[in-house]
Length: 340
Image (cartoon, rainbow, N blue to C red; front, top):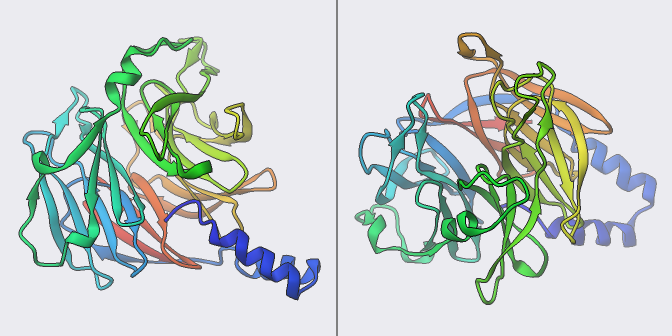
């Protein structure tokens, strides 16, 4: 439910009916107010990606435990009831304890596209063939496209020889644009042919501590506002505070800074006014990331305003209505509903 093109149509109609001042007043009314946050669904196993369909139903990727092939695509009703849809996706764990597997997902028509980072696969699932209560399918039966091999074989200027296809959105001509959190790049998939190309590279950033001199940008989120892409970054170790950046990428792949002064961004979404709302994972300390230090932040007019704080490692955010958002807290196994 990203890149809402209907917003542009909405604005065009308003221009025909109202003055410019009235339109600005309307957008001002839809800026986030003090939020109400509530538990929407629980008992999930490392939920990460969230997508909302036209009926207000959620599709969620669960990365799994990291100790078995138990990654899952789940369906959540508007009342918060969870149904497993596809099971058996590979799930692995790093030496640091991070779980890797299914990442983000995207709904285009009836086709749900799901990224699997360690496999480098773009899985596809037709949601029209599912009804709540159906027996879960196995991941091995789904169609997929190999994205990871293309990324690893490509010679980037700053080549990491790694891939972790992480997040995706729809851009011009209906093409899918994928951020790779290991290659630090945006990959373009042609909507008609499926052909892959490197659309943009996300540059490393200077490390204020000096060791190492630079750290990787690590793109984790991408949206398209109708004119440009906005890409949120996590930054690599030692995760310098205030150095994460939202980059803007024009339709030709040219990258520049949109907003700075942020920290360890895990996802990015567009508000009704097309300004980015991002999730900050948490504050990094000598003991690691501090619990309950995550935030939801609105970035606009050169300012970063915290809308929510005290969150426990938020990993993704999805807008589900004019003032409704859903937040995935991976380690808690929860989806929270935010109403502004």
